[in-house]
Every structure is written in structure tokens, then in C-alpha cells.
Image 1 (cartoon, rainbow, N blue to C red):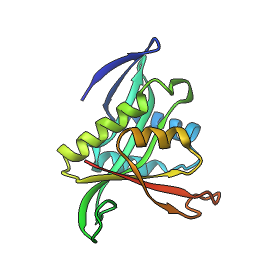
Image 2 (image 1 turned 90 degrees about the vertical axis):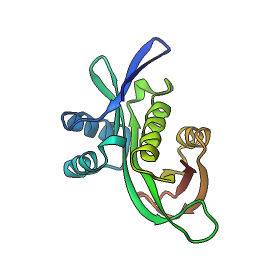
Image 3 (image 1 turned 90 degrees about the horizontal axis):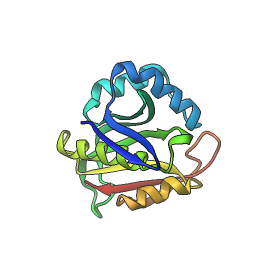
Length: 167
């Protein structure tokens, strides 16, 4: 999937990630997020869930990414305990100078579409720092709801919201 967007004078395109993107994805992860993963973790997720793993590219440089996985587990949305296939947004990040251009929204929408259409997931969930209001607002805009608070979820002790949305 590829498409171009222009907002505030910056152009970018969303496309499926490739193995040759992993070094740039890791660089963005290290610059943008306190939670980091080893090289093999990115490679395994890309190989396993490549149809829903996307990057944003501007001037032939990767400026953002979304790394998902697909799991079976209890629904985060249904009242009764129900096993469902669900997408999990493991990591999403955009370089600071490319934020507020719609890139995070476009990455999330592309990945959610693939989770549903390619992997037949019924819902999607993620964890987000309770202090990360820009991300929380983005997720709410795309239909996510706070399901519960995960106490001391992050290594520094900060809580996370588990947020989920139907697909």
C-alpha cells in the first residue's frame, strides 16, 4: 500500500516496511521513545506481520513507523470473556520534526485496515503512557477507549492506559 499526503508543506507517503528499513526504524525508536527493543524483535515482527507493519517516508527517509502483531486473547471490548483475534500496536513513533502532520493517524489507519482485512482481527489495542496526551487524543480520535489503567507498566514506574477499538 502506498499513498502520498501533503500537509503544512511536507510530503510523505505510507508504505509497507521492508527489511532494509529496520535500521532507520530502530533509529526513530531510539530518538522518539524511551521503550526500546533489540534488532531481532523488529525483524521478527516485520517478517511475521509485514502486511500491517508500515513506515512513513519523506524525501526517501523513513520518518515514522508502526509495528504491530496479531494475537489471540480475551476481548478488551466485550463484557463476557470472549476469545478474539486482535491486533496489538507494539510500537508507533514519528520523528519530532514530522509530528502534527497526520503521519501518526495515517500509519495507525493503514495498520488497522490491514489487521482487519489481511489478518481478520476483530479489535485492536495498545498501551500508552497516561501522561502522553497527544497520543491519547490521537487514539480517541480513531475510536479507541481507555479500558483500564496498567499500574507501574513502564520501567520508570509510570502507569499506562490499555486502550482498545473495534476493527
